[in-house]
Amino acid sequence: MKISRRGFLAGSASVTATLGGAKLGFAAVASKSPASRRTLVYLFLRGGIDGLNLVIPRTGVQRTEYENKRPNIVVPTDHMHDLNGAFGLHGSCDGLKSLYDSGRLAFIHAVGMPEGQSSRSHFESQEMYELGTPGNTSTTTGWLARHMNTSPHIASDALIPSLATTASKPTSLRGDLRAMSLDDASSFHPNSGRYGDEHLRALEKIYDGNSSLDHAVQNSLDMIDLLEQIDITVPDSYPNTGLGDDLGLVAGMIKENVGLQVATVDNGGWDTHNGQGNNGGGYFATHVGDLSAAIKAFVDDLESAGRLDDVVLVVHSEFGRRVRENGNQGTDHGTAHPMMVTGGKVLGGQIYGSFPGLRDADLYLNTDLRMTTDFRQALCDVVGNFLLNPNLATVFPGYTGPKSIGLFDTNAIFANGFE
Image (cartoon, rainbow, N blue to C red):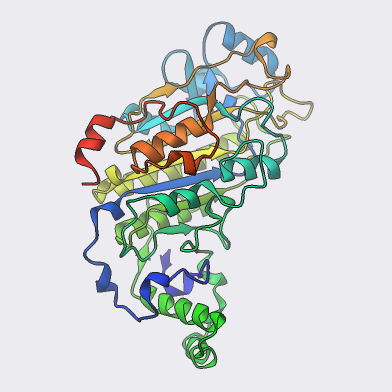
């Protein structure tokens, strides 16, 4: 897949504000500030992933409880990869297991919001996670936007400091006026078809005034002209899926050195109320296998380009599933779930956090995996200790808990800065 200018959409009126309205050549970004080389990629799994069938109890009382509560959708021990003895990884996740074994992937089990502030509603839970304010959906900006607006390390010459691989900005980027949204190439009407270039030039003539709308269109056209010089080819190593294309595109933008510091990616299909599959197979196995293959391809791509140390990928969802299977051989909306973090500087090969247990007395509301790690603790670790943004109280207002979970060798990172 090749993405050129016809694949780009201006995410806001000021997306090209740093260009000053000038038609710059792509060579203008050849010299980058080291600050612009670090990138956080935030992959959100829409629908609520069944984390207990991803990172699975293997032994002891937890295994017994797991098997008793999920008699039809249980993942057998011979269809999982051993992670640390106590837990296994779904057998379809060969790519994730390889990253884990090489020390580049970490799991954090039982991540969630504080008790009493979570929600089993897709909309409410996604909003609160992306706003970074559990229990409050009225916050006006997203946590990634607050990071972008407060970080001292956003390069002044960054052409695309933040990117969403969707038709519109997600809630996490709400309030970031520089964010660009990127949808499928075929959906970009102004430059598609026989009269694409003529259409763009006609827009230049129509919007040649001084109003805010004129400036918005002019800036968007400037960016389109600039991006015409970018030609990103997603390697064949990526799976032929929407997620593979999105992660391949993000990797391509990182390698083009356009100053990308934050990118968001969405992946749906995780609302498995029925027919998840049994004996380690079926729908969930296929879906999680696609996820694993796309993440592995992304990491391998950046590693081969010498850029993996500059990137952290965080994988998150709006909630996990209930511990007990339902009557349709699926699972209903739950609470805590595992988070994944991968990258060259991640201290991987281990499972962080504490597992609360699956006995009836251990469950939240007698149905859900109980939260033991506040999601903001893990994200503070990434924002503060990888992206080196000290303004964590602004990025996550009201959060007073620990600011690290141990994902990085902070002595090494702070010693080297952004080099």
